[in-house]
Length: 576
Ligand SMILES: Nc1ncnc2c1ncn2[C@@H]1O[C@H](COP(=O)(O)OP(=O)(O)OP(=O)(O)O)[C@@H](O)[C@H]1O
Ligand SMILES: CCCCCCCCCCCCC/C=C/[C@@H](O)[C@H](CO)NC(C)=O
Ligand SMILES: [Ca+2]
Image (cartoon, rainbow, N blue to C red; front, side, top):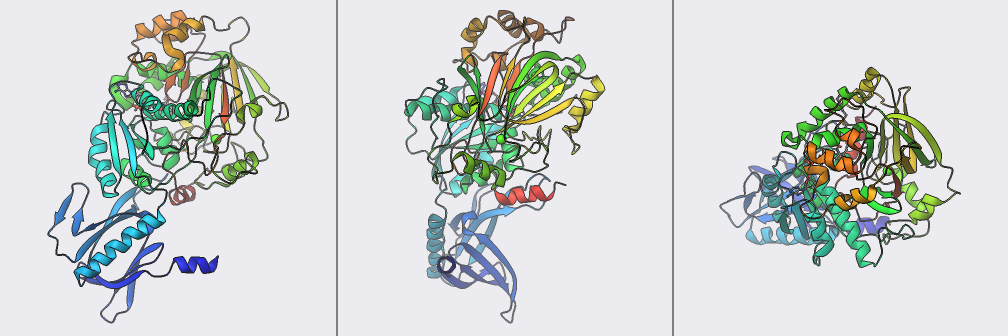
């Protein structure tokens, strides 16, 4: 093994080059490009070393790409190398990546050509997982409505520099991106990218999973089916309001950082939770399935979408002041507590040992990345996996999160020690309590204080959860609600979860006995049911069952091309 490494690392090219007025000895080995400043006596000074896997592109002449492309007069002897540069001023939760650029001057044109050729060969050889062709969906209405501008000014120039060709679709309606992935020819695309928030990411997720099952002739609704793994990666350029999936995987919400991760082919498998109602699939979730507070905040915030991202803060305050709790019955299937716990104070990072162990346990005999899902149904229903636990009562909030769900509002997330790809989720039960207690719980999301260290809060690592209304309060008339809402994912032009005026929501609520909730903020009558927030979309049912579909570490589906070890190591070192 050592011999092989040495062999690969043999110097391919070494020469004396100039950077500005300083002389350097530059060397290209198999894995690295190094340049060392030389003093007047030819002694080594400072060395810069860039892994070939992090070189973004090489151009002839003195070139600049961001903020605008410009080429200085080419002297025939110059070339520019672009690479990933970690910014020292990044956020405490992850490093910002910037486009590094060094302009080299060679003694001759021949040598310049040799450098260009060798660097391009090295890039091809050592970056097999880089995408070449991407399908990009821009939601022009996400977040502060900057999606188009963000893509064209910050991302497209980087893709072009890296030799990635992209086909861009600016969406004109909700679910267009999902339908495009489900129905159109995707031959030749190495990945799909969304420019927007968690909602458009969710469209891509549903498109990619749905398409793969269609092609395999499998029904997503059939609970006995083992879902097929997908070949397409999903990249996220954050331009939404919460951008929780991006933040939880990369550590920062920054379009340039994400574009660079996408270019170099980073990928992070994610756990996916499927939500069912009466044995039919309603939606998939990767971050939050939340009832009570988080459902109410989402429903309220949809009425104030015009406010932009601040709508969540406003609605959060309004819902908090309405002081609600809801009756329900929660059942959950605990995960193996020997492997990990939501209170073990660990942080899941790329290469996480808990996620790797989970993979070995779930897929003991299969080395490749051929199948993402295990036989989820047998896990879900098996008696040998453990006993279902039941909790009945009144709750402020019931939240199931597959990942930490960290975001700028809550930098450590709803469950700071949750894992990205371990096949489990964390169930957070906040029982009814006095307003000050609940405020303390909410406030702790914004700090490093432990939000689970409160007497009315329980957290469990789980594989499946069911929620029902207490006897006598079961939901009814779901068929009609489904007819209106297309079972959660809406048809063209119909967007009940995002577009509803209050009147609109109340009318829908009346159809399913949710009137109490939907007019709860402006009417005096206390609501009896909340709604479920599923990754930022309102679910059309109250009684649901959720189960983890186990993502496989090293698999290549459902991957935000994001988190990598170094970003995450930095993140780690900042956590007590
Ligand atoms: N052209 C469009 N017109 C209307 N809605 C759209 C369009 N394109 C996408 N959508 C929908 O808009 C919703 C919100 O988009 P997105 O998630 O990108 O932004 P956001 O809600 O501001 O951010 P976040 O989800 O991170 O809070 C998504 O559910 C998506 O399906
Ligand atoms: C009284 C003020 C209340 C302040 C509440 C602070 C707590 C913030 C916690 C935010 C967690 C967000 C979890 C992410 C969920 C996403 O899936 C979803 C879609 O983007 N976003 C939301 C806001 O539902
Ligand atoms: Ca998980």
